[in-house]
Image (cartoon, rainbow over all chains, first blue to last red; front, top):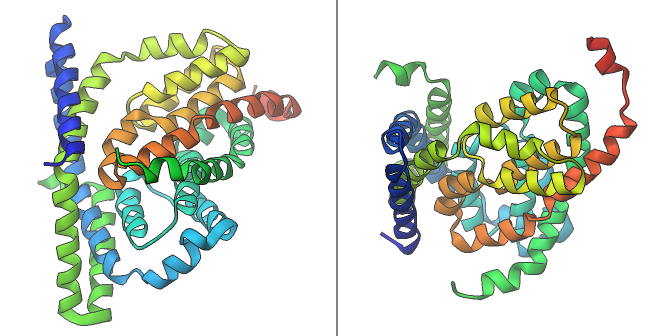
Length: 169
Length: 179
Protein backbone atom coordinates (compact mmCIF):
# COMPACT_ATOMS: atom_id res chain seq x y z
CA UNK A 1 0.00 0.00 0.00
CA UNK A 2 1.28 3.44 -0.90
CA UNK A 3 0.88 6.78 0.87
CA UNK A 4 -2.23 7.79 -1.11
CA UNK A 5 -3.93 4.52 -0.28
CA UNK A 6 -3.11 4.83 3.43
CA UNK A 7 -4.36 8.41 3.48
CA UNK A 8 -7.64 7.41 1.91
CA UNK A 9 -8.18 4.50 4.29
CA UNK A 10 -7.52 6.85 7.21
CA UNK A 11 -10.07 9.35 5.88
CA UNK A 12 -12.59 6.54 5.41
CA UNK A 13 -12.00 5.43 8.99
CA UNK A 14 -12.42 8.97 10.33
CA UNK A 15 -15.67 9.48 8.40
CA UNK A 16 -16.87 6.08 9.57
CA UNK A 17 -16.08 7.12 13.13
CA UNK A 18 -18.05 10.34 12.76
CA UNK A 19 -20.99 8.44 11.27
CA UNK A 20 -20.80 5.94 14.13
CA UNK A 21 -20.89 8.71 16.74
CA UNK A 22 -24.05 10.24 15.26
CA UNK A 23 -27.48 8.92 16.16
CA UNK A 24 -29.52 6.92 13.66
CA UNK A 25 -27.06 4.13 12.84
CA UNK A 26 -25.55 6.27 10.08
CA UNK A 27 -22.46 4.07 9.88
CA UNK A 28 -24.55 1.08 8.83
CA UNK A 29 -26.38 3.14 6.20
CA UNK A 30 -23.05 4.43 4.90
CA UNK A 31 -21.54 0.97 4.71
CA UNK A 32 -24.64 -0.24 2.89
CA UNK A 33 -24.38 2.53 0.29
CA UNK A 34 -20.69 1.73 -0.18
CA UNK A 35 -21.43 -1.98 -0.56
CA UNK A 36 -24.18 -1.42 -3.10
CA UNK A 37 -22.00 0.95 -5.13
CA UNK A 38 -19.08 -1.46 -5.05
CA UNK A 39 -21.22 -4.34 -6.23
CA UNK A 40 -22.26 -2.39 -9.31
CA UNK A 41 -18.93 -0.72 -9.95
CA UNK A 42 -16.34 -3.46 -9.42
CA UNK A 43 -17.21 -5.43 -12.59
CA UNK A 44 -17.30 -2.21 -14.62
CA UNK A 45 -14.02 -1.01 -13.17
CA UNK A 46 -12.30 -4.30 -13.95
CA UNK A 47 -13.42 -4.02 -17.56
CA UNK A 48 -12.35 -0.36 -17.76
CA UNK A 49 -8.91 -1.26 -16.42
CA UNK A 50 -8.63 -4.05 -18.99
CA UNK A 51 -9.42 -1.47 -21.66
CA UNK A 52 -6.73 0.83 -20.33
CA UNK A 53 -4.17 -1.99 -20.28
CA UNK A 54 -4.87 -2.87 -23.91
CA UNK A 55 -4.87 0.81 -24.83
CA UNK A 56 -1.42 1.20 -23.33
CA UNK A 57 -0.23 -1.31 -25.94
CA UNK A 58 -2.00 0.16 -28.96
CA UNK A 59 -1.77 3.86 -28.15
CA UNK A 60 0.72 5.37 -30.59
CA UNK A 61 3.14 7.03 -28.16
CA UNK A 62 4.76 9.24 -30.78
CA UNK A 63 1.37 10.57 -31.88
CA UNK A 64 0.44 11.42 -28.29
CA UNK A 65 3.75 13.20 -27.75
CA UNK A 66 3.38 15.04 -31.01
CA UNK A 67 -0.22 16.23 -30.67
CA UNK A 68 -0.66 16.42 -26.90
CA UNK A 69 2.91 16.56 -25.61
CA UNK A 70 4.55 19.20 -23.44
CA UNK A 71 5.44 21.31 -26.47
CA UNK A 72 2.07 21.05 -28.17
CA UNK A 73 1.09 24.47 -26.78
CA UNK A 74 -2.21 25.99 -27.81
CA UNK A 75 -2.77 23.26 -30.41
CA UNK A 76 -2.70 20.58 -27.70
CA UNK A 77 -5.07 22.56 -25.49
CA UNK A 78 -7.50 22.99 -28.38
CA UNK A 79 -7.41 19.27 -29.16
CA UNK A 80 -8.04 18.49 -25.47
CA UNK A 81 -10.93 20.96 -25.41
CA UNK A 82 -12.66 19.47 -28.46
CA UNK A 83 -11.98 15.82 -27.57
CA UNK A 84 -13.16 16.30 -23.98
CA UNK A 85 -16.39 17.93 -25.07
CA UNK A 86 -17.14 15.10 -27.47
CA UNK A 87 -16.28 12.28 -25.05
CA UNK A 88 -19.41 10.57 -23.77
CA UNK A 89 -19.55 8.40 -20.69
CA UNK A 90 -18.68 8.72 -17.05
CA UNK A 91 -15.46 8.63 -15.05
CA UNK A 92 -15.16 4.84 -14.95
CA UNK A 93 -13.96 4.59 -18.52
CA UNK A 94 -12.53 8.10 -18.84
CA UNK A 95 -9.97 8.09 -16.04
CA UNK A 96 -8.26 4.76 -16.84
CA UNK A 97 -7.75 5.93 -20.43
CA UNK A 98 -6.61 9.44 -19.47
CA UNK A 99 -4.11 7.86 -17.06
CA UNK A 100 -2.65 5.90 -19.99
CA UNK A 101 -2.44 9.01 -22.19
CA UNK A 102 -0.74 10.83 -19.30
CA UNK A 103 1.82 8.02 -19.05
CA UNK A 104 2.31 8.05 -22.81
CA UNK A 105 3.64 11.59 -22.54
CA UNK A 106 0.73 14.02 -22.82
CA UNK A 107 1.30 17.47 -21.31
CA UNK A 108 -0.51 19.09 -18.42
CA UNK A 109 -2.27 21.73 -20.56
CA UNK A 110 -4.01 19.35 -22.99
CA UNK A 111 -4.93 16.89 -20.20
CA UNK A 112 -6.50 19.54 -18.02
CA UNK A 113 -8.30 21.10 -20.99
CA UNK A 114 -9.65 17.63 -21.79
CA UNK A 115 -10.79 16.83 -18.24
CA UNK A 116 -12.39 20.24 -17.71
CA UNK A 117 -14.17 20.17 -21.04
CA UNK A 118 -15.38 16.62 -20.45
CA UNK A 119 -16.61 17.54 -16.94
CA UNK A 120 -18.49 20.72 -17.82
CA UNK A 121 -19.96 19.71 -21.17
CA UNK A 122 -20.64 16.05 -20.29
CA UNK A 123 -22.76 15.10 -23.29
CA UNK A 124 -24.40 12.11 -21.60
CA UNK A 125 -25.41 14.25 -18.61
CA UNK A 126 -26.64 17.04 -20.86
CA UNK A 127 -29.12 14.81 -22.66
CA UNK A 128 -30.05 12.54 -19.77
CA UNK A 129 -30.50 15.20 -17.08
CA UNK A 130 -29.99 18.81 -18.00
CA UNK A 131 -32.28 19.21 -21.03
CA UNK A 132 -35.20 17.26 -19.56
CA UNK A 133 -34.94 18.65 -16.02
CA UNK A 134 -33.75 22.23 -16.52
CA UNK A 135 -34.98 23.07 -20.01
CA UNK A 136 -33.10 24.35 -23.07
CA UNK A 137 -32.72 27.91 -21.83
CA UNK A 138 -30.83 26.98 -18.69
CA UNK A 139 -28.67 24.49 -20.59
CA UNK A 140 -27.88 27.15 -23.21
CA UNK A 141 -26.87 29.76 -20.63
CA UNK A 142 -24.74 27.25 -18.73
CA UNK A 143 -22.98 25.95 -21.85
CA UNK A 144 -22.22 29.45 -23.13
CA UNK A 145 -20.88 30.46 -19.71
CA UNK A 146 -18.65 27.38 -19.69
CA UNK A 147 -16.98 27.56 -23.11
CA UNK A 148 -13.99 29.48 -21.80
CA UNK A 149 -13.46 27.37 -18.66
CA UNK A 150 -11.22 24.61 -20.13
CA UNK A 151 -8.86 27.29 -21.47
CA UNK A 152 -8.70 29.14 -18.15
CA UNK A 153 -7.98 25.88 -16.30
CA UNK A 154 -5.37 24.67 -18.80
CA UNK A 155 -3.50 27.97 -18.91
CA UNK A 156 -3.57 28.46 -15.12
CA UNK A 157 -2.34 24.89 -14.75
CA UNK A 158 0.59 25.62 -17.05
CA UNK A 159 1.41 28.69 -14.97
CA UNK A 160 1.22 26.66 -11.74
CA UNK A 161 2.92 23.57 -13.17
CA UNK A 162 6.45 24.31 -11.97
CA UNK A 163 5.25 24.83 -8.45
CA UNK A 164 3.23 21.60 -8.23
CA UNK A 165 5.11 19.16 -10.41
CA UNK A 166 8.55 20.44 -9.41
CA UNK A 167 8.12 19.97 -5.67
CA UNK A 168 7.97 16.67 -3.93
CA UNK A 169 5.00 16.34 -1.70
CA UNK B 1 -24.89 -12.80 -11.41
CA UNK B 2 -27.88 -12.07 -13.61
CA UNK B 3 -27.42 -8.38 -12.84
CA UNK B 4 -24.12 -8.26 -14.69
CA UNK B 5 -25.71 -9.42 -17.91
CA UNK B 6 -28.34 -6.70 -17.82
CA UNK B 7 -25.98 -3.90 -16.75
CA UNK B 8 -25.58 -1.91 -19.96
CA UNK B 9 -22.43 -0.06 -18.89
CA UNK B 10 -20.79 -3.33 -17.97
CA UNK B 11 -21.72 -4.85 -21.33
CA UNK B 12 -20.45 -1.82 -23.24
CA UNK B 13 -17.16 -1.84 -21.30
CA UNK B 14 -16.79 -5.57 -21.90
CA UNK B 15 -17.32 -4.96 -25.60
CA UNK B 16 -14.69 -2.21 -25.69
CA UNK B 17 -12.29 -4.42 -23.71
CA UNK B 18 -12.70 -7.28 -26.18
CA UNK B 19 -12.24 -4.92 -29.13
CA UNK B 20 -9.11 -3.31 -27.72
CA UNK B 21 -7.77 -6.75 -26.79
CA UNK B 22 -8.32 -7.80 -30.37
CA UNK B 23 -6.55 -4.60 -31.45
CA UNK B 24 -3.50 -5.72 -29.45
CA UNK B 25 -3.67 -9.13 -31.07
CA UNK B 26 -3.76 -7.63 -34.56
CA UNK B 27 -0.83 -5.38 -33.74
CA UNK B 28 1.50 -7.95 -32.23
CA UNK B 29 -0.13 -11.31 -31.62
CA UNK B 30 -0.50 -13.07 -28.29
CA UNK B 31 2.59 -11.36 -26.95
CA UNK B 32 0.98 -7.91 -27.17
CA UNK B 33 -2.23 -9.18 -25.59
CA UNK B 34 -0.18 -10.46 -22.67
CA UNK B 35 1.64 -7.12 -22.39
CA UNK B 36 -1.75 -5.42 -22.23
CA UNK B 37 -2.98 -7.81 -19.53
CA UNK B 38 0.19 -7.17 -17.54
CA UNK B 39 -0.36 -3.41 -17.79
CA UNK B 40 -3.95 -3.87 -16.61
CA UNK B 41 -2.77 -5.92 -13.68
CA UNK B 42 -0.20 -3.26 -12.76
CA UNK B 43 -2.91 -0.58 -12.83
CA UNK B 44 -5.29 -2.69 -10.77
CA UNK B 45 -2.55 -3.28 -8.19
CA UNK B 46 -1.96 0.46 -8.05
CA UNK B 47 -5.55 1.69 -7.84
CA UNK B 48 -7.40 -1.29 -6.32
CA UNK B 49 -6.85 -0.45 -2.68
CA UNK B 50 -7.32 3.28 -3.29
CA UNK B 51 -10.65 2.68 -5.02
CA UNK B 52 -11.93 0.43 -2.28
CA UNK B 53 -11.09 3.04 0.36
CA UNK B 54 -12.65 5.78 -1.79
CA UNK B 55 -15.96 3.96 -2.15
CA UNK B 56 -16.20 3.33 1.59
CA UNK B 57 -15.30 6.96 2.30
CA UNK B 58 -17.93 8.11 -0.19
CA UNK B 59 -20.61 5.98 1.43
CA UNK B 60 -20.04 7.63 4.81
CA UNK B 61 -19.87 11.14 3.33
CA UNK B 62 -23.18 10.56 1.63
CA UNK B 63 -25.01 9.78 4.86
CA UNK B 64 -23.32 12.61 6.75
CA UNK B 65 -24.43 15.28 4.26
CA UNK B 66 -28.21 15.28 3.89
CA UNK B 67 -29.79 16.74 0.74
CA UNK B 68 -31.96 19.23 2.60
CA UNK B 69 -28.89 20.88 4.00
CA UNK B 70 -27.46 21.35 0.51
CA UNK B 71 -30.73 22.82 -0.76
CA UNK B 72 -30.72 25.30 2.12
CA UNK B 73 -27.17 26.40 1.43
CA UNK B 74 -27.43 26.82 -2.34
CA UNK B 75 -30.79 28.56 -2.32
CA UNK B 76 -30.01 30.96 0.52
CA UNK B 77 -28.34 33.89 -1.26
CA UNK B 78 -28.19 35.44 -4.72
CA UNK B 79 -25.57 37.64 -6.39
CA UNK B 80 -21.86 37.31 -5.73
CA UNK B 81 -22.35 35.90 -2.24
CA UNK B 82 -24.75 33.32 -3.58
CA UNK B 83 -22.23 32.35 -6.26
CA UNK B 84 -19.45 31.93 -3.70
CA UNK B 85 -21.60 29.87 -1.34
CA UNK B 86 -22.95 27.70 -4.17
CA UNK B 87 -19.39 27.13 -5.44
CA UNK B 88 -18.26 25.90 -2.03
CA UNK B 89 -21.26 23.64 -1.58
CA UNK B 90 -20.65 22.08 -5.02
CA UNK B 91 -17.23 20.93 -3.84
CA UNK B 92 -18.68 18.87 -1.01
CA UNK B 93 -21.82 17.52 -2.71
CA UNK B 94 -21.54 13.73 -2.90
CA UNK B 95 -22.94 11.53 -5.62
CA UNK B 96 -23.52 11.61 -9.35
CA UNK B 97 -26.01 13.50 -11.53
CA UNK B 98 -28.88 11.44 -10.13
CA UNK B 99 -28.41 13.37 -6.91
CA UNK B 100 -27.31 16.83 -7.98
CA UNK B 101 -29.69 17.46 -10.88
CA UNK B 102 -32.91 16.89 -8.96
CA UNK B 103 -31.49 19.27 -6.33
CA UNK B 104 -30.79 21.97 -8.91
CA UNK B 105 -34.15 21.45 -10.61
CA UNK B 106 -35.94 21.85 -7.29
CA UNK B 107 -34.02 25.04 -6.53
CA UNK B 108 -34.69 26.40 -10.03
CA UNK B 109 -38.43 25.94 -9.52
CA UNK B 110 -38.17 27.69 -6.16
CA UNK B 111 -36.75 30.71 -7.97
CA UNK B 112 -32.99 30.43 -7.36
CA UNK B 113 -30.90 32.54 -9.76
CA UNK B 114 -28.85 31.41 -12.74
CA UNK B 115 -25.62 32.60 -11.13
CA UNK B 116 -25.61 30.36 -8.05
CA UNK B 117 -27.10 27.37 -9.89
CA UNK B 118 -24.55 27.44 -12.71
CA UNK B 119 -21.75 28.06 -10.18
CA UNK B 120 -23.00 25.09 -8.17
CA UNK B 121 -23.16 22.72 -11.17
CA UNK B 122 -19.74 23.84 -12.42
CA UNK B 123 -18.17 23.43 -9.01
CA UNK B 124 -19.77 20.02 -8.55
CA UNK B 125 -18.52 18.85 -11.95
CA UNK B 126 -14.94 20.15 -11.82
CA UNK B 127 -14.12 20.34 -8.10
CA UNK B 128 -16.27 17.69 -6.37
CA UNK B 129 -14.06 16.08 -3.72
CA UNK B 130 -16.15 12.97 -4.13
CA UNK B 131 -15.15 12.46 -7.75
CA UNK B 132 -11.61 13.56 -6.98
CA UNK B 133 -11.30 10.95 -4.22
CA UNK B 134 -12.86 8.10 -6.15
CA UNK B 135 -11.42 8.65 -9.62
CA UNK B 136 -8.83 11.35 -9.99
CA UNK B 137 -6.43 10.64 -7.12
CA UNK B 138 -6.36 6.85 -7.67
CA UNK B 139 -5.69 7.15 -11.40
CA UNK B 140 -3.81 10.43 -11.83
CA UNK B 141 -1.93 10.74 -8.55
CA UNK B 142 -1.80 13.48 -5.96
CA UNK B 143 0.37 16.04 -7.76
CA UNK B 144 -1.68 16.16 -10.95
CA UNK B 145 -4.92 16.27 -8.97
CA UNK B 146 -3.73 19.11 -6.74
CA UNK B 147 -2.53 21.08 -9.76
CA UNK B 148 -5.83 20.67 -11.58
CA UNK B 149 -7.83 21.48 -8.46
CA UNK B 150 -6.05 24.77 -7.81
CA UNK B 151 -6.06 25.72 -11.49
CA UNK B 152 -9.86 25.19 -11.50
CA UNK B 153 -10.78 26.97 -8.25
CA UNK B 154 -11.91 30.08 -10.07
CA UNK B 155 -14.02 28.32 -12.73
CA UNK B 156 -17.36 28.14 -10.83
CA UNK B 157 -17.19 31.86 -10.10
CA UNK B 158 -16.39 32.72 -13.74
CA UNK B 159 -19.23 30.52 -15.00
CA UNK B 160 -21.67 31.81 -12.36
CA UNK B 161 -20.98 35.45 -13.11
CA UNK B 162 -21.25 35.04 -16.86
CA UNK B 163 -24.44 33.00 -16.47
CA UNK B 164 -25.91 35.81 -14.42
CA UNK B 165 -25.07 38.31 -17.20
CA UNK B 166 -26.09 35.99 -20.04
CA UNK B 167 -29.43 35.03 -18.55
CA UNK B 168 -30.61 38.60 -19.13
CA UNK B 169 -29.98 38.30 -22.86
CA UNK B 170 -32.02 35.16 -22.92
CA UNK B 171 -35.27 36.71 -21.71
CA UNK B 172 -36.78 34.24 -24.02
CA UNK B 173 -40.13 33.12 -25.31
CA UNK B 174 -39.22 29.48 -24.61
CA UNK B 175 -40.18 29.75 -20.97
CA UNK B 176 -43.52 31.36 -21.75
CA UNK B 177 -44.14 28.80 -24.46
CA UNK B 178 -43.89 26.10 -21.87
CA UNK B 179 -46.54 27.65 -19.67
